[in-house]
Image (cartoon, rainbow, N blue to C red):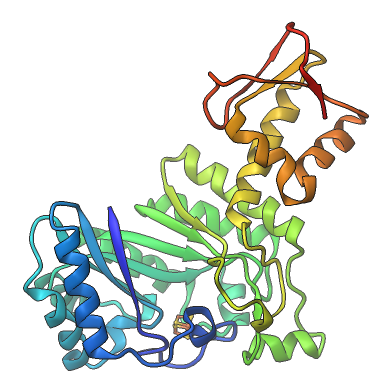
Length: 327
Ligand code: SF4
């Protein structure tokens, strides 16, 4: 599925959420309608034969006045067909039967909800203005109306705890959305969270904590056949806008390397470690983070290595063949 993301920063948002600065994240102010129309037209013509969605992200789409929603829908209308639909992102408190019927009539197929957490203490500390119960109801209604449902989760918000994470994971498994995005909380300039951080009221997760928590979430969701389509904020965010928190340009890769590392530690033997050439960068990239972790966990000076072209990405094995190298 190909997605054309169109950012409508903060449009329809009832207020600025404590951690959110969409203008920083999307690097644009207000959308220019002519530009959006051209983007949609070019995208649809170029991908005429491919399954695709035009996605309105970065605001609370269903909280916009209906006439403004219609204006965006009309830009896509002439391209809608069995291969082309609309995706929107919104908040759980901007979902109702009427809203969903209006979306359905206008070609919306996928709805992404910024849930962030299913633990009431976090929703309250992060001043989201809805409860876990109402978030669950919004998810269920979206599913009942046969839209694809995606939910965004943010570990590390104020009030975060292992118990809150466990409840969020458990509830997500019960809801069974079509996909999840995991965005560990980072502190952006100009947000209330930044003021809380600066006054010592809020402490973000460390990078290692965020990797470990995201790894756990990814593992559980994958085991339960819930697709995780994004982990960590995108890499072209202006880093000078980030005051604190577990941001890394390749956060998703770090999580994938953590999963690989955990499997490797579980299966480790004193034979030669045989790797796919496509995984060398996992070991040697990111300042050799993975190799250093592996050696320190196993208390080894060097690891015997053999690279096998036939091994697919993400697969390793242990062999009696002599190593070609020691890392
Ligand atoms: S988090 Fe979502 S609802 Fe809140 S201000 Fe940002 S875009 Fe709007």
